[in-house]
Length: 272
Ligand SMILES: [Fe+2]
Ligand SMILES: [Fe+2]
Image 1 (cartoon, rainbow, N blue to C red):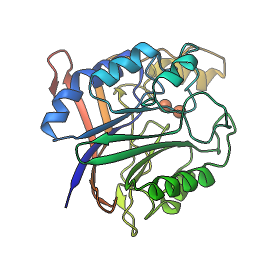
Image 2: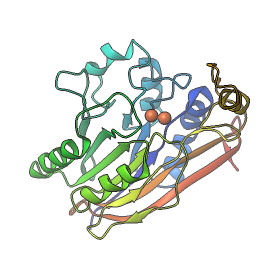
Image 3: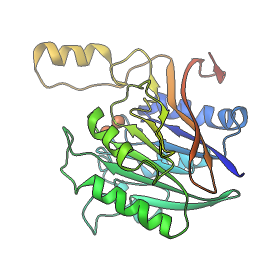
């Protein structure tokens, strides 16, 4: 049996998050025998979107694919970069003609791996096409093309919408992993059809924060109801995600394990 080990990292937040990811990916790759790495980069540029430069840095550090989400267009220069870089994804369920793609298939020594991203529609903007129909159709297309290992990033706000996506795609894809809410959930599981599932992979960003932003600014916003800026928080970073073992013949997820790693000393690259 041929098995591939895949790392999926949740939303990378700002400079602290992306520096920690870039520092740690080569170490993690070796320590965990990783063969394919997917990262969500929608908050990598100061919390708002991703720039071409940051995408290049993440790919060079070892990411095979970068997914995004509702913040995908926050940095205007990314629009023209999309057609040049198929390994950078935006949600699949944008209207036809939108720059970029929501799905990519890459060759690996173990065979082809597909990554698909969809965005939910509950409490999240902008309103996109139906993600359930889009994901189901894309999974069927990929499988008809002979791709078995298919990882789906479900970028959504509500747990129900994410679980529904996981259940819909059970037996049709290798894993459905949630992003956007930045708080890792503890419901990692393998559904009866063989699909690995986790409602929220969590974020890669400062531990002492509110979703990666400074605690004081967010608390002040809620107390005052006044508009304000939310600077990226400082301090030690936690990397969150999941490690999956996928059977390349059937596409089934054989194991899913949450990763939650507090980096005590980022400069020294020492996990703590
Ligand atoms: Fe995010
Ligand atoms: Fe998001």
